[in-house]
Length: 33
Image 1: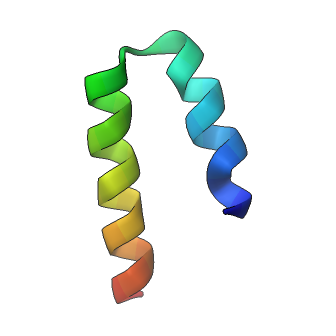
Image 2: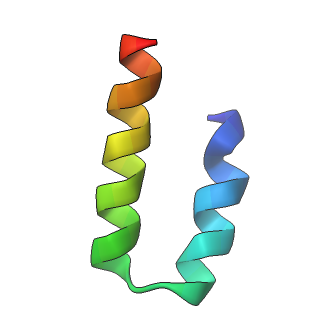
């Protein structure tokens, strides 16, 4: 939840679909790590 700020910032610059894919990817990666 702490990383919410970064995705939110990116959301202003990039469309939703890209954000969602990046967010899900980051979520999976952080879970694996």
